[in-house]
Amino acid sequence: MKHFSPPKAGQWVTPGMAGVAVLVIAVIILLVTSVFIVNQSEEAVITRFGKFIAIKEPGLQFKLPFGIDKHYKVNIKNVQTEQFGFRTLRSGISSTYAGEISEATMLTGDLNIIDVEWIIQYRIVDPRAWVFNVNERTPTIRDVSRSVINMLVGDRAIMDIMGAERSAIEAAGAELMNETFRSYRLGIDVIAVKLQNIDPPSGVQEAFDDVNKAEQDMNRLINEGQQAYNAEIPRARGDRERIIQEAQGYATERVNRARGDVARFISVYDEYRRNPDVTRRRLYYEMMEEVFRNDGGTVIIDRNLDSFLPLRDLGNRSRPGQGAADGTEGGVQEGGR
Image 1: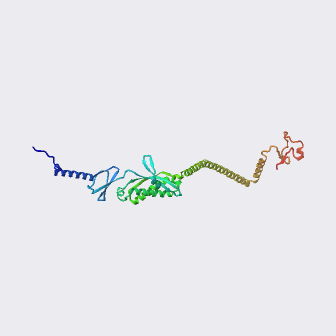
Image 2: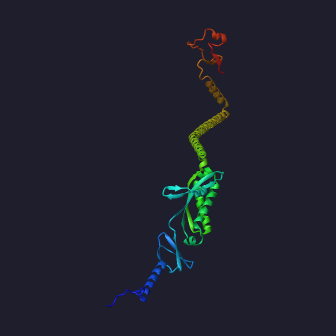
Image 3: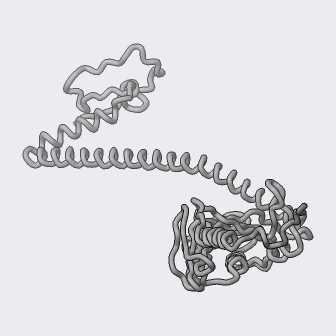
């Protein structure tokens, strides 16, 4: 009777099976090292033995296997952010550590200390430059941003930084950072610089609040004064225009009246030159009429009593004999020619 003995190690693996296994492993390595996928927000930089070859677009891509070609994926769509002076732990919650405090503390142009927190947002626009030109990319971005903001804050007064110059610092910061990064050929474009919190140091916060309150009161008083100015000045201008128009109307009236008097005088003078006696008499009558126009108690008679019989008004209440005393008949004055 024969006994069955188990096969020794290696007796089940035939040379053909070993070859198939090697082939399968080689195919797997070939596929793993030659096929890769680029996401929609990425581009891949391809190098061959460390030298740049090409940039691959999103999708399924191929390269030489076994490490001959290497690829570096670069996110070119998403906006990346760097924070300065604080760190966001999670959505809506931020924290500040000793390192962040030191980079946030700055000296203003009027020699005040201020804490500035800001962020920069940038996008990679040149994947090749991003991969090859700068080794320590993030530290470089942070150092350039800190130097630019420190320079802009150091050129301005503290109240301007917290007020009117805030947007100007953001715009100028983005422009200066882009100029520097282009000179470094870093391959990024700064989209925005945003100042988050601008506060004085905690030790002088109370005094600064007092100054800020005084500044607000000053602005309020200026606004109230401006409102009063806007209410009174138009009224004064209206009165001025009215007075000027009245004066101009009076001047026009006086000039026209004077011109009329001149024209009348010239006309009378012309008539006088043509017939002096008639004109002289008419002027005399007009003058006498003007003199006695409002006088009701005077009677004009001929000096020699040649024209009519003088009769006294019986209703006159003068005393008897008064006329004989002054040589006239009851206060009658001599006149005429």
